[in-house]
Length: 457
Ligand code: PLI
Image 1 (cartoon, rainbow, N blue to C red):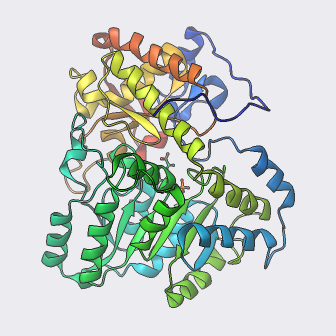
Image 2 (image 1 turned 120 degrees about the vertical axis):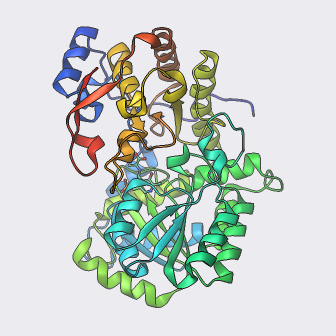
């Protein structure tokens, strides 16, 4: 693929500023060595997340002016509904304020106490909503996902042997649904192949288990299928998207990723009218009336436009190639990363980069802190800190991977920013032996990574 520059011109800018090294050190101390607790104005390049941090297009901003703010029956809702129906071929569309709102509503209807939800790898809010509804989240991704140097092109795939044996061992009545996360964020933004989606759906049909997509990054997944899977190179993205969804019964979506908006989400159900009706009654007290579901009319208008833009091939070419650019530059600096490079982020393998730091001293978090001091860049740990302690033993350091996620917001940074990120990490890697682990000074009991405080060892 030949690489063209950004497929857009910049019409509005938001200034960013690099504060001095001394100031960065001080700000991090004040934030308890937790980049989550930094003020964004003290961050130069913010790679914490790609969720809700993208830039909207002129078409989306003009859509905001067309938003219909009626409480019931908003014109913007019907525009969103038609857009989503065309994209997915599913019948029922319910807006929500964001992905976790969708999970809260839909999962409460699908999970009975004690049932398992089988996923490739559940995202943390997904896992939390399964547990809140009395279910057990089970991850059944292929083992190659845990080996960062393995070049499998679809490391988000399910291990279908494990999937079927789990169902046979536990009984189909004890499985609420199968959750296919595309792309698989927790495995490093890794895609799921069409062949694998098809195989999962076949097993699901055999045992009468519904398949629900976690479709936060559905367009990026479709792009990888087009580029990497036999038989798809001449198909357009919309066709691939419809084929993926044809193998499922419904989806939850955070619009903050491939919806190209700063807030918004969706529940979409293929044809189960009863499930749709149950969701529409549940959503009223939780999110709002079913034709706005926690969103303003203008949010729904912008989401509809975003869903049309995200499947444009020029957009996807640039989006994915910018993430690949960062990954390739890091490889040139001999920095170990999750390969092949994923769709929305580059994941640095901190276990390999900092082998002298024990998992219980959070190597990827230590790296995130040092990267901020070095260059003002904010990344996030995806490893033992995020994983949390084992419920029973209270033991720490149990994650199979210790990764620093450098997540690229959509249409926000230019290739120059990416170059700076790579150079900064390259510089830091040369001083790697001086980096030490961290210890807690405050450890919250739940979702500890957001608010914990640390000191370097
Ligand atoms: O942040 P929400 O509530 O709009 O969406 C939750 C969510 C669901 N599934 C997946 C795969 C996600 O990645 C996800 C949110 N991801 C965030 C916030 C991230 O930083 O990756």
